[in-house]
Structures are given as C-alpha cells and as structure tokens.
Length: 221
Ligand code: SAM
Image 1: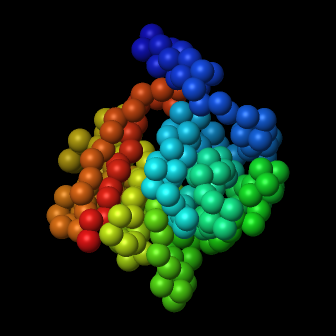
Image 2: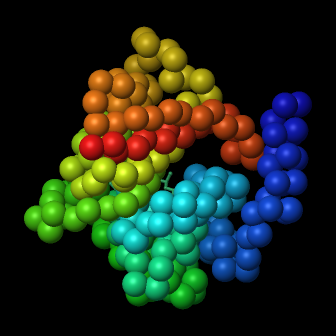
C-alpha cells in the first residue's frame, strides 16, 4: 500500500543521507523505554530542521514542544558553541527524559528546557525581551495561533518560524472541522495570511509518519 511505499522511501533517504548516529538512535530508544509517544519529527525532517538552522546561521532558537528532545538535538547541533536553544515542555516526565538525552548528546550547555505550560513560560520569557533567530512550534496544536503571536514578539526581521503538523492527513482543508487541532491550525494559516510582516508557505509531506506537513514562515520586518 501507499504507506508502505512512503516508509520505504523515507528509510532509503534516512539511510543514505540523514546520517543519524548512536546518540539520536539512543534518544529514540530511551523515549520508547520511558513510554513517550513516538510523535517526534522523522529523521529526515529532523535533519531538515538542522539544515534550516545552519542556513539561518541561528544562534538563538526557541522550541515549543520538547517531548524527548529528538528535534531539540537536531536543532541544537546546528548552533555554534555559544549558541542557545530554549525548549518548552509541559510534561515533567518528557522533560526529564529529554534532559538525559540532551546530556548524552553533549548539548547540556547549549539547551535549556523550561517545564510547564508553554504559554506561562512564554509570558515569563517576555520579561527578558528575547530575540530568536529561529522558532520551532511543535506542541499542542490548538495553541498554534498563540504560539505564533509569541514567536512574532520574539523575532527580528529574518527570523524563521517553522510550525509542524499543519496538514494532518489533509484535515486542514475541512472548514467545518470541530477538531481543536485543525481549528487552531486553520486559525494559524489565517493569521499568517493576514500578517503583513510575514511571508510564508506550507509543504505537504509523506513518509514513515504518514501524511502531514509543515509551515515555513519568514519574518520580513
Ligand atoms: N518536537 C518534538 C520532537 O520532534 O522530538 C515533538 C514534540 S511532541 C509533537 C509535542 C510535545 O508538546 C509533547 O511532549 C507534549 O507534552 C508537549 N505539550 C503539549 N501541550 C503543551 C503545552 N500546553 N505546553 C508545553 N508543552 C506542551
């Protein structure tokens, strides 16, 4: 079937190009062992985020939704030695597993996990008036519009915002959907479309994790 084909091609790409390593593999094993859901980005998307962060020359990255730190490790590895990544996670168990994975990856000094409701952490972060070069939004989807607002607040012209899972099996086009995730994502698209400081697109993806997609949003002014 079509999912088998998507998975096969994803594996082909991963094996040849992604160059995952023991640390990343161990991270996924640790996550599974701790009972975390396997909803991390795929290896090919993780590598893509890494490439984007490199292209961006990112020194400060904000991640909303840590889980076990798989995407965190991909992103933090793109940072220079004195770069910083702040990752926000609600679930203390997820954060604990992520911290161990990040320590094992040798990224302890570059990554700070903040535990709690992302909206609370973001409100607190506001006091520091931080500026991020890149923001990766990947937490509870109904809050996507709120997260985009904070991302904008913490941005400079040139900041890149990536928001994951915006296609959700094609459900995003269902304007009557009662799914809070779909509603949040549609609201996010409307916000992006209306906001003159943003230029953006979204890319549909298929692979081992099914059919989904991400939005890429550039802050222009
Ligand atoms: N970015 C991770 C990766 O690719 O490895 C995957 C993140 S997972 C899709 C979403 C995470 O967001 C979960 O760990 C979940 O506990 C967390 N989350 C859900 N609601 C949240 C909230 N209100 N505040 C902060 N984190 C939240």
